[in-house]
Length: 169
Image (cartoon, rainbow, N blue to C red; front, side, top):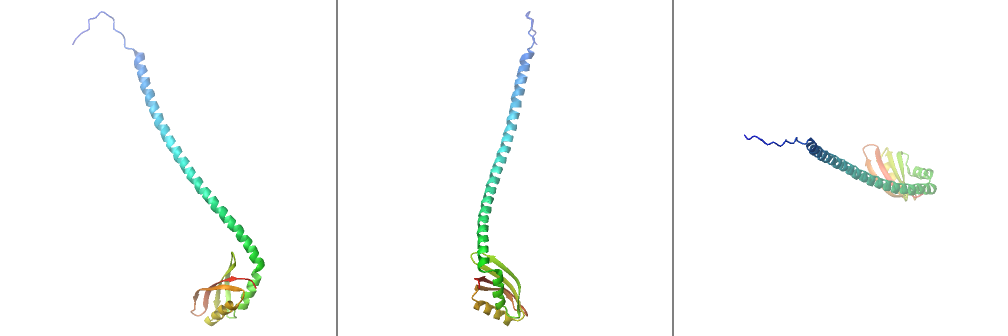
C-alpha cells in the first residue's frame, strides 16, 4: 500500500458535481417514463378516433338506408291512397263475397299495397268441392288477377291460403 506524503492539501470531493450528475440521470429517466406514457396515451386516442370514425360510417350508412326506406314509405303511402280510391276495401270485400260459396268462410285477409293491391286470404271450406268452387269463382271474377293457391290441407275441412291481385270492380 502506498501512502500519500504530499504536502499539498487534498481537495474535498465536489458535492455539487455529483449532485448535478444525479439530477441529470433522474431527469433523463423521468423524460423516458413520460415519453412512454405519452406514447401509450397517443395509441389509446388513435384507437378511439378510429372507432369513432368507424361508428360514424355505420351511422351514415344507417341514415342513408332509413332515408331510402322513407322515400319508399312515401311512395307506398301515395300508392295506398291511390289504390284505396280506385279499389276501396269495401269494394274488395263485396267482390270477394260474390266469389265465396256458402261452405267457405274467410278466416283472415291481408292487403299489400304496392304497384297493385295484393290480397292474401286464409280461408276454410267445409268440403274440398266448396274450395274448388271458390277458386273457380275467383278465377272467373274480372276483379281478381294472378290467383295463386297456396298451402292447403284437404283432410276433412280444407284450410288454405290464396294470393291474388285486386283490380277493382
